[in-house]
Length: 203
Image 1 (spheres, one colour):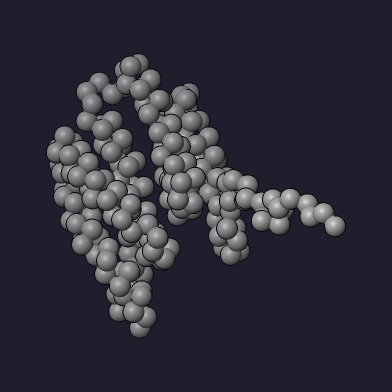
Image 2 (image 1 turned 90 degrees about the horizontal axis):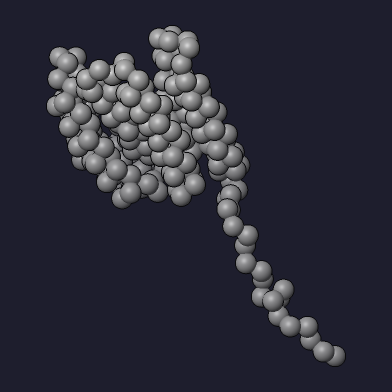
């Protein structure tokens, strides 16, 4: 997907080049920070890796709120996709960072915090009608569910993960289908027309 984003830097359309170039600095910083995270993670430096993830989360959040209106073929690979992954990675790496992560208290907190994925995704779906963020978090929730199921069948977290996946998927489809069909989905009733509000005319 990032390769597709890079190709738009060489597009023949000026608006595509401008949009791709506008997110370029954040895109480069994201890749550098992600590389740093991987190097720290594989060496089990989880505390430093968490710091890098938080910095990248700030970087990508700033990018999102400044440039969330760009075309989806730029938005998804350079903005919403990396942001969704970084948000989930903060919890993933954070769980590894905490000592005694297999005890009851850690599991309870894990079962609570996993619902933040639903809250986070719902915010972008409702506030920005961003189905790319919804799809990204849906896939990540499914991945968590599969991983937790393979790790421990008798547990709640994989059930919660699949429930979150299903809810995000439904909300995302509700937003995505009208967008693909060229219709604007409105959450509120439109105001009545002037003719409907006008008083009846007497003859």
